[in-house]
Image (cartoon, rainbow, N blue to C red; front, top):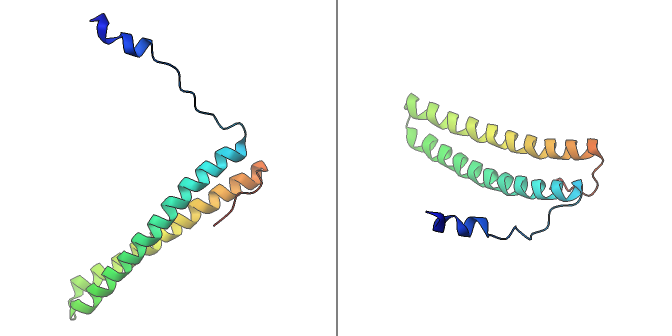
Length: 104
């Protein structure tokens, strides 16, 4: 049983560097938010295209038209939340005095 514990106990600690100041931390968070932001924008474009296709193929069907409107509403809400996430990061960085945090 002790044989399985030996590698865990004798493992070396990680040697990576830890961010030394708040600007580095904010840059990492900003990069993560940027990736999520652009993925959300791409998903919103596909949702709007799906809504347009649903509108075109609805042929007056109220259920399909309502579904298409909801697609557009959800896409708009997603884009607003993505912009708010970027704005919150920029606001917190500004309040804490972190310089050189790009908004886009």
